[in-house]
Length: 296
Ligand code: SAM
Image 1 (cartoon, rainbow, N blue to C red):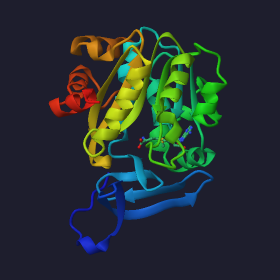
Image 2 (image 1 turned 30 degrees about the vertical axis):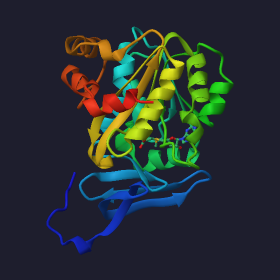
Image 3 (image 1 turned 90 degrees about the vertical axis):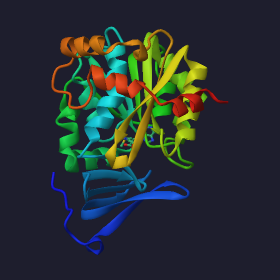
Image 4 (image 1 turned 60 degrees about the horizontal axis):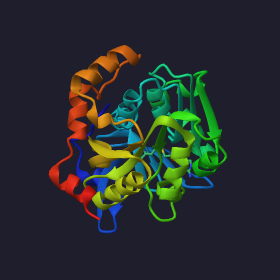
């Protein structure tokens, strides 16, 4: 990936991502590749200075070429390896196709990806081949264009071993706002087998810590076991949080050695970020984050 350091600041048009009502971060725009509006959201693909090509939905970076693999490996592998034998997996959201790419590194029978927005998939197929790397064409992939909540409501109970929620943030008015509620996590639990496990992206443990803790406590109300972890993602300019829930399993109990052994035995293809040592780092949340998670 090319970086552009030696040009004067004014050379760029700036992409400004609003993080909270009173803070933002900025990237120089090297080139606009696509811009359009679907029924649900504004879709942009742009080449950004430092983080490279990026997908932006409603003004929020979803992932960048520079480190999409940090986000997607973090989201997928801890819960997949915590499950003894995940065969049927659902991904709710996941537009770029990189989440199913990571799931398909496991010996699964089927991964069902349910995304609301057909336009995002079309744009991903055309502009983001480095993300999906053929995952949409894998015979184990089933793509469903539907609202994730409706999909789960209509599903037979106990249909999946693992459910991965790779959704846009729960900001007011966003198409995924209702997919971070207690009612929704109850639908997720109903859709899981007894020893199933779920994980959701859970916003930032740095600039939206409160939102992360609310998601954690909501998941905890529904499942016997729940917990959080995070990874630093340069494209988001933040530590990014993930929350898992399960009645029987607990990825935080896996040792570094167990993770390395499981990766060797069960994952086909290369991981660039996640291994036993990274796992320990991700799950070792700092004191103030742990404290915020337990406060009412
Ligand atoms: N990595 C991302 C981030 O920044 O958190 C999320 C990735 S992915 C692009 C988010 C996807 O969620 C989008 O493709 C969007 O269409 C989808 N989505 C939003 N609301 C949804 C809903 N109600 N049901 C299913 N998919 C939804």
